[in-house]
Length: 219
Image (tube, rainbow, N blue to C red; front, top):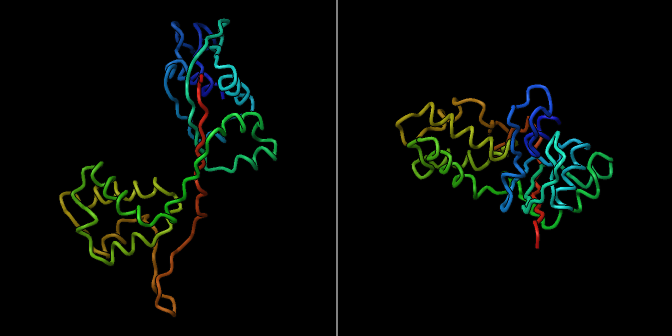
């Protein structure tokens, strides 16, 4: 919590052991006049949630070890894959912070519910990591395989797959069904059921949808 607090709020000279002599500007100060994105908001410790509430409600911050309150004008966008309302009921997330954050919310469906996006995203990541492989060059059975997966790790899992393809297929534009199965750690797709239909191997719990919410700054 101390590390996260110092990153967000900054600190003054000598605020704690190991602190920089000149102090440090926090992320909230750096974002003054703009927007800051807070990922995994549901994992912020309760004691730090109170300080975050003050930022949203009073539009002010206080550096660790400081005695000067500074006004800031920021927009906060946050995201989580947790059910924050359930955490509020369990006493693990402050209700006042939840309602302060929840000005506008957007639930993003997991990748397994957006199969049309899979190949588009895969092409994006392949290009990002310098691979010559593209979905348009893949055999139909490979594209069918890729779009049939559940991707419990969502976008991160697909990005990892793109990195592995780049590493194993450097300079090539396509890959076979055997090669995609050999790359390793990709979702397993089997067709050994009596019906002959593909069966998705679900050895991990599907990740829940992400929940993004925003809180505006000064009117």
